[in-house]
Image 1 (cartoon, rainbow, N blue to C red):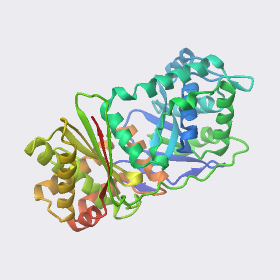
Image 2 (spheres, rainbow, N blue to C red; image 1 turned 180 degrees about the vertical axis):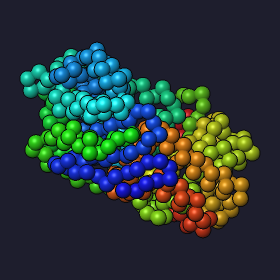
Image 3 (cartoon, rainbow, N blue to C red; image 1 turned 120 degrees about the vertical axis):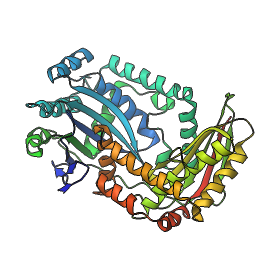
Image 4 (cartoon, one colour; image 1 turned 45 degrees about the vertical axis):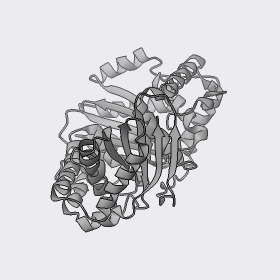
Length: 420
């Protein structure tokens, strides 16, 4: 067991058998506790839509609580508990997540685990399929969500850039599905897919809060799924950038041009070198004192906004910005100039300190929210790592400019995407 100065105790995973693991994160900082069931799938286009629809089916009820009204009634009984489901994309995995949050009082959290078990293992069925009306509702909701992507132009441009950049890789797949995947998806086919998921998916139960692992075990061990043959999910591949950047321009008749620049690095996310990449991104576009913001937005006034985000599992950095028409090439040149500055070690003391303080504040601030704690430790589990948030903070505090420069030299522009 590792005790952090940041107030979280993480235990080694407890095997429940059949490739189902229990992870307990003990912290006394919160009045509530959370339990998450993670059903892990390798991202692929053929089944991403099925998984999104399946999530919608599970969310609508189970045999014991066959309606949203019954589910809400059960949550009231569990001291005002919260139940939710979502699709989570982590690197090249698509994760079906069932979530319960409640007060860690009496048997409340173990009852929450029992509730998640009912939702997962005893869904509403009719013969050899899910109930037709429930399946239809889930299909329509997924269809509406897919068609509504275009309404958020910033997010849409980001996803289009990643799709072009990672074409042929699992990371390019939309975790919430595709319209063509809905065709012919009837209750029977979806139910057959559900049974295959139970049989072949690695499953993690992650619980965080003021909890005792020993008291959770009896309920956790009831997550028994017979006949399981879980598949191994390979690690996401981190590639070097292509020799010449891929340039993509698409016309959407928008009032503002969205530009996304995808940068690749082959630095492994579980390696010591990753922290240099983390700092590179923060200096480049992680905050209001970053190079992109202070020089391209403020000094040159080239864009309305600009930032960069690091996708840890793929070691991909994406620069996002909104510009006026005709500035695409100028933005590419300006961004490349700032990246080269970092490669050459041209980082001011103010930029360095701002990036360091920004990173440590993000990690410390994340520990003030149960959802962020779950997200951080889930990433560690999926990478087969056991770093704590304190480890990350300490590593950032001791990072050198030389380490950051070495990481920056392994970052190059791969794809430039313009949605005008």
